[in-house]
Each structure stands twice: as C-alpha cells, then as structure tokens.
Length: 192
Image 1 (cartoon, helix red, strand yellow):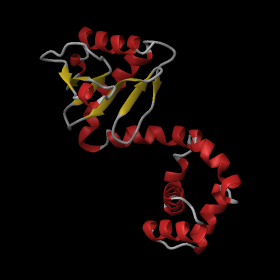
Image 2 (cartoon, helix red, strand yellow):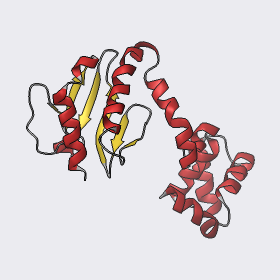
Image 3 (cartoon, one colour):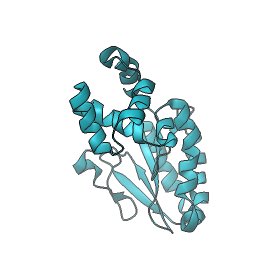
Image 4 (cartoon, helix red, strand yellow):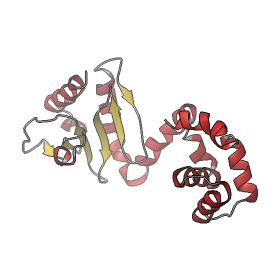
C-alpha cells in the first residue's frame, strides 16, 4: 500500500517522495506537528499525507530504510538482536529453536521480526514469538476455537478479533515439547 502511494505521490502532488523530503528539510519547520500543519496550509495536503510526509522528512535514515522491502530485510536481524540484548539474552536459544521448528513446517513459512515480537506467517500470521519477561517467551498461536487448558492460555484474541488466540509460556528449551510442536503445526495448518 505504501509503495503504491509513494509511486502515485508525484502525480498527485507534483513532487516525488525524495523531493518532498528535501523540500521539507530545507524549508519546513523542525517540529513534526508544525510541519504537518504547514504542509496542510501551504500545499493543501490532507492530514494523513501531510503527517506522513512530515514524519518521513524528520525521521532518521533508519526509519526511512524500513519503508522499502530491502531496507526492512537489512534491519530485521537488528530487531531480533535488540530484543534479546541484555537481561533477555538467555531466551535467544528458545527463540532460535522455535524458528528452526517453524521453518521445518513448510517452505512457505515467513519470519517477519518487529521491534517487540517475531510473527510467523504462512498466508497470515499463524504464530508469534514474544520475549515477555527476562525469563519467559510467550509463544502465541492462531488456533481459533481450540479449547484452553492450564498450559494453553487465552490471549483475549477471540474477544478482540485478533488472530493470535492462544499462548504458551516457555522458560527453557525443554518447554518446547511435543505438545507445543503440535500446537505450532496445528496453527500452521489452519492457515493453508
């Protein structure tokens, strides 16, 4: 969606994204709110367009890199490194084993790290890895109406209409037992 919008920006506004960024950095106010208001007033841009352009122009190079597929692929490993830095470093082995198990489910598994979670996709997100505390990863699953148990917890996803409906707490590699692997495979298969 963003790529389509960027491609149409020149036709709709008379400037490309790069031209807007340079213009805003040269002539615009340094504050994001003031910049957005300036763009709306001076160029009759809509609130969303003005806000987005102001954010991009005033953001650092890392934020801009995230907007392209290549940029995301370059920065994604850093998200994982940062997630497991410091006190959560001991959880990295659990994370890596979950990734190994997930990738073995099929050639269509995609790993898409964010800043605080690592969603696992097939067609949609079917599971997510979240280092919840310094000693625990919450592995979430898209399991729909699967009954909850003392181990398989309700995330509130059904009520919130979120895909991740269930989770299991993992504190060690031994917690990644056959039952957890079965839930992961079940979530993967539900997204066929």
